[in-house]
Image (cartoon, rainbow, N blue to C red; front, side, top):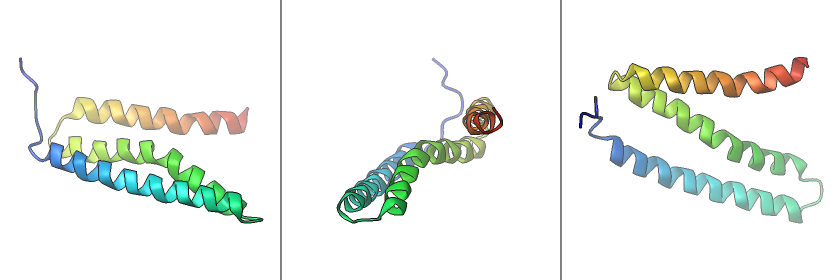
Length: 96
């Protein structure tokens, strides 16, 4: 079976990214817990929520860069369409 272009460093890069994401989510969880304990820490809670929501979007953007590097433009296009759809949701909601 032909798999097309394969990035030889993809597995190691995915491992590093997974480690970084788990650490960022740990910090976001700690911020959310701190926001529960501290009075008037709504900004901290919103930062924690925003961080958790941004991680999948940043990961897809990271994959666009990786796939562009191996010239797998089908996946680049699919990821860019996904990012446009994610961005279109809030814009449509704002103007509705």
